[in-house]
Length: 345
Image (cartoon, rainbow, N blue to C red; front, side):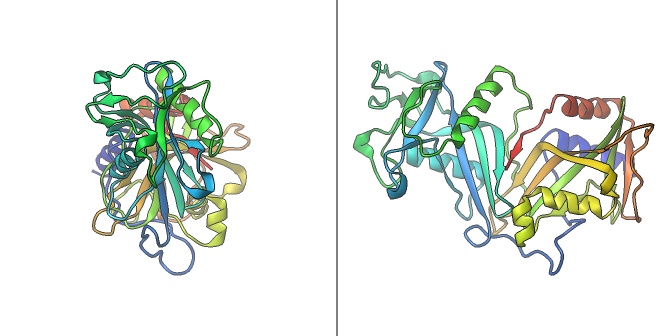
């Protein structure tokens, strides 16, 4: 029965559906972590990358005093009570004038658990009904019409933005507010050309902490083992992120290493967080936390003749050998192709 539950959990996580977070296996030292609250101890940012059929990018011109007149992708901070998608749609409407729908999460960027940005590949609703024809060299001045809004022009300038416009991906306007968006634009173009991971959107599941659910794997040729927590029902282990200076400086990977240090001798192991398999957040009823379902690899630094996973200390964890062929193939494929949403720092 335990293996059946684990198969169901792993299937759900690999499918991007997620699972309720009911407890955690590893937490920061000292007091139990307090529930996170937007605008108090965490900041989440949403960002939209739009690419149209002409390989043009949607940019907005900043109105804020410190960067007024510069250009950037539509982005902004989430507000308490919002889901991630609601925040994305609000920011795009306020800054660009368009209704939109996210297609997939493209990237997660973090500066420690207290600041996390979610970048999405996005499209305007009703994009097929675009009827505006833009004169060469004046795309940013001519309104583009969609069933889901009108592209913001300088006549609608406000505190959110001065205007919005479509620009060739290889010839963006200057000055840019920051160069960090160039990587995201390239990532979106690469994804459109060849999707490296399945379409992935946040699952609306409540969580009170910033935490990570680990699919921690050890592989040998065509065999895969997954680390399992044993406290309660056998489960994929969850590690809660801390907000102490060390964990802030080290980033969210510190919580992964902390959990693995509690059950493995890491000095002879290489541990890598490959990326996201899923993202969970609700934002309603003061549940501002997020759970990131992450794919992690554990390997010997000097493999030699090591054909079995490293020995687990204690009784709170064990290695589960995945024998179901479909699940095994899914895991191997995701590992081989890096078929995950990247986490960048």
